[in-house]
Image (cartoon, rainbow, N blue to C red; front, side, top):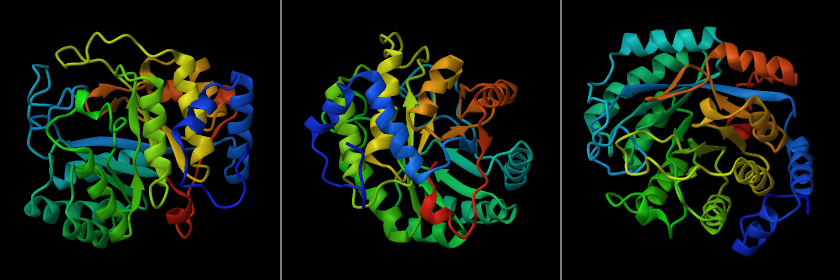
Length: 330
């Protein structure tokens, strides 16, 4: 069952459900065996995420505290200035991050925003960090400008399966998301694309999400797997939590299906035990966000992550600039 040769782009839903149904030990053994073909099993890529423009988003994403559709405690703010962002990037690098990700609560950036961001991206790149941004939908021209400024990765998650998508978002279509991914690929940037689990979706929906990701023309170089963080005031607050073993199974299936991608433990780690995270790393996760906040929600403190890494014998991955475009994923 371990893939050999070129990664597949023809996965069927039934095959993925069959992965989910494997005995837990068999699934994790398969995922770990695949992981060792392509990665150092004890190295984890570290990214830091900064909200550079918080709140007031016109989208109605049911999980998001930054949506203007929900009454949460997140207030709309203007975009941070360049020097503030660069200071945060320097701090992230000093703390051990190799990639700096910038997020803005926009439906899509205006061209004048792209002009400002181009200078910021160039400044972060000059610090010796990999650069990533998540800004909403991008046109082809905007993607080209960001690439020219030095942006290495663009994050644009699919969030869930196409069939469950309407339960989560109504203000943009699934195809809108796929179109942005195509614009990013065409510009020559690496794609960071994954989803959120624990939103009330079925195992079939999780399988279909992974199927869509793995069957893209090129696997996302980075696949973030988020566990829903329930925020009071959002539509999804109060949903039944996802079983921890189902989350680990999702990580393992992502590793098997997209063997050369970085699989990132993203939102939700604050509520995960060290044991659960250890299972995720064994299942093939090899990237995390580092720092006390992910946009507007809590993330484990650095000291907690450092202690877990020491217990597990994990090291921070130091990417090689000449090969990062081939190997990476946020």
